[in-house]
Length: 101
Image 1 (cartoon, one colour):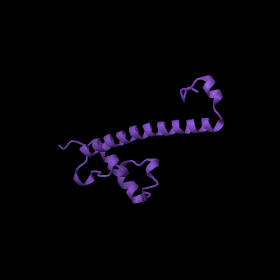
Image 2 (tube, one colour):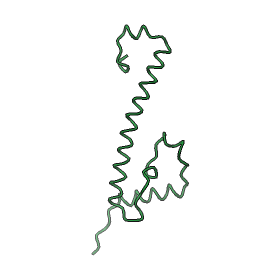
Image 3 (cartoon, one colour):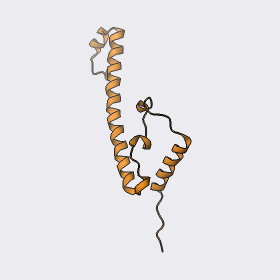
Image 4 (tube, helix red, strand yellow):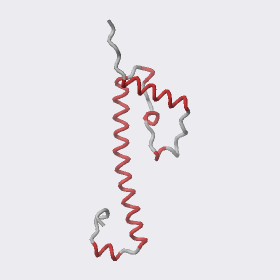
């Protein structure tokens, strides 16, 4: 009841299909909010990583950095070679370079 913001009497008046549809709509709204936050985090992460990477190592497509489950039906699966390349790029960003003497 609190998830939908309805009181007890309204809840009792709902038939099962109305409750199901209300929960389905609420879930869609929550997923939409989650998508917005996830997309903004990915976008920020991409730009922060590209600041640290040099020319050809920069990632131009945010989906190569981090793909979400709702994008998987449109994207082709990564090959093992592509996965290793992305992991090496990310590892290169996290390692600190030793100062030259």
